[in-house]
Image (cartoon, rainbow, N blue to C red; front, top):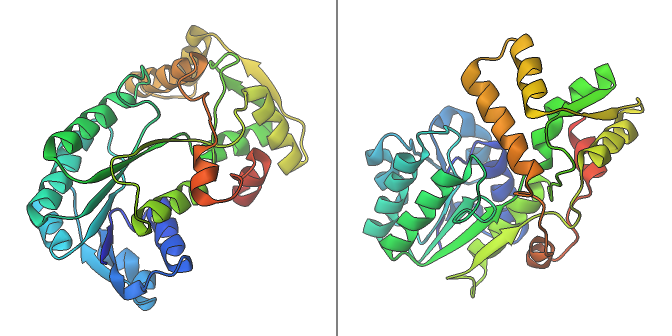
Length: 284
């Protein structure tokens, strides 16, 4: 079985390929799709086939998918452009008759009020309409998302956010990569929609404590109102669109969009998910 991983030179894509090989996949059976193939020389050196795949150039997508049995579509990073980009991959996969199509979505994408959810919802609907044999991986937050916050908080001693007491069931990218590798390699997952998150749902006081533990420097969580947060971001030089996006994300966390966890991720990968402090330590 030939497996295509899109965005293979990204942080998640590389880890998926690592996990596929660790789980016994022949490197020659893996196709690493990359917009810039020069960044995939290390993958090629491991025996992985590298193919140009640019979400904005459907001809490259079709060429990369030709002859592939299973596709992992890692959601694009260009917010606002992802529906058309994802559609190019879905259409090419349908035309190629792939036997398994896996997509990295967002928690409760069809019903969530999270600012990032609409593009994922639209993508899931496109996949459903295509009739592709699919598996949806609704990934919660990556612990690595907080690398910048951790670095800044360790310097200032303050972790400021407008999330209130909202909780996040994060896990490491490696945890989610393992889940993707499992569903790509195993039978029996077609038709499943998996809500994936870490074993522990933590709040920002917990995050501050974890940063303190990892860095050895005292950090306290300072809760802000949305208006206070927006003012602080403005004073830091952020533009209005970015401020609106960041505060909307925090509002979603405050309202519980990332709080739920039921152990599905741990069950899929056959081990506990990476604890918060351990995940931060790996990127400190």
